[in-house]
Image (tube, rainbow, N blue to C red):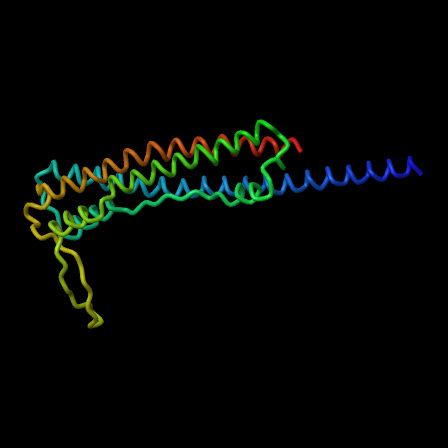
Length: 219
């Protein structure tokens, strides 16, 4: 009878360990999915930042030339420089496993790395990115500069409907206006700071993803 009880306990323990391992694998797969989603998102951001950089360079080249440009060309390049960029981190997989106990991850090194990455590294990057947006993306000042460069006019389309479009207030001197130089400088500073920290964050995500994949491959 005692032997039977011991065998039953051993079987229960084995079943519990197996269930714990299955749960751990499921959670690691969730974290893997979140990290892969972050990398896809970062690729999209990098493309938008590249558009901003190209717009900045095109405008700077135009300011250095004596060539005259049409309103539509000026607006197209200006809008390219003004491409919007945002920043978010997908913490879904980590938060899910954290809610049931991060100790479910049996690999001590991986567990510590995930805690360090999500609780310290990612939070630091989020704060820095927030400061970049707050310090450089000054909406009121940017709007003031924008309004000094552009006017809105109403045009009638071929279908008899109307549309508001932007036109330079001063096409002749548009490229030499100090307001344009200030707008370019704001976007240039933004791209420089943003690109540096995006690259840092991307390396962190890739390192973390490699560690998670290695653990899953060892199972």
